[in-house]
Length: 467
Ligand code: SF4
Ligand code: SF4
Image 1 (cartoon, rainbow, N blue to C red):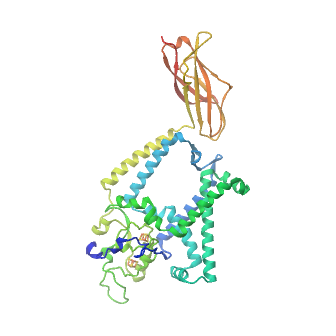
Image 2: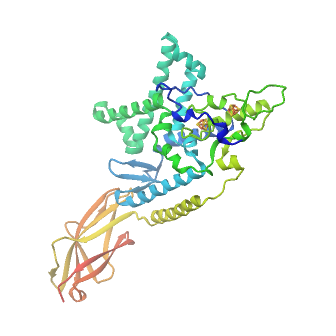
Image 3: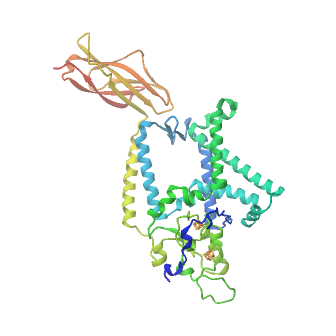
């Protein structure tokens, strides 16, 4: 049987599953999944939430493990500070991440959406669980929504939405902790509200948006709004692994009758795969953009197959070619090309991260000045230094001329003291013997020393008279 013979009625492709024919919202009352995949996803979600809420509290040597202060352009990853001048590393990291996501999607479809995406984790493992806990099964939820506003309905709805908002409020604080740091958040929480009113209003705004997304917008984020979701159509091909219904085995579907020899396909048309689907689709209609690859239908179908004594895996991870031609997953030229680019980008990224220095020094001559004659047959040039200290320590540094017999004379200070996580500016003369300046411009190597140990060498130019 060919796929086109099965799906004569393609009307489901004319509208998204969450919109009725007359354009109204088709609210999804998803059944609680149970099964092997759901257990794995639950374990992953617990780990995910622990990491999300715990990470802002982790410090290494007094530095946050992660800080994404977009307001000041200061980022800390793995307790290392990155400044705007490290932007190229971020750019490469972002490109690597995008190529990784593209490659991953080509091979494994929307695995990211179903297993890792925060939208799915928060929706399925926090908000929907609260809903099941307070309002009960999908059938009970439906009844409650249709019922008049009795006392029971009021307290159930009120409790659900209060818990939804409180969780959103907590998430808003956690996000802010990623931006400002946990110490700053603790300070803000303990201070009088009037001291941080605008920040508080910002948190309320974020919490309300977050609450709105999970209380009302829900799966529409995945099926309509998310740009990554919309990209699937161009990234998928016949070899992409997806949550797929084996129509060859399942059709022609029909009800299961006990003690009767089955002459139909293995799909017993129980609709359990549809009932558990958080985006409200019927996977038996074939691959659809609305499928987030959550595996809930795989668990539901395996459960039913087990009950009626048929082999599991009627809905399973498989590619279109896998189902139609029985092919195994293989490396296509597209996957090979993406893999090569990904390896190259990863090598560049690792090299950049390992060659990254704790301080960044730039030295340049003060503009509009030539050289100065000094006593004892010497010449000087005036320089500015810009030093970014990316560590969380304050320490002095010393500059030395490495390739000439030269002296450094600071202007207005005795030593260069680098403040932690800050930019220090310094002005100084470099004084050389006139006899050494044999050209109009010579290249100087300046060594930067910390505790008499050279930590970096910087080049600059010294100007002399025309010879
Ligand atoms: S079709 Fe299956 S895998 Fe896709 S979203 Fe629905 S339940 Fe999840
Ligand atoms: S759960 Fe399995 S058997 Fe039941 S309708 Fe879906 S595909 Fe058919």
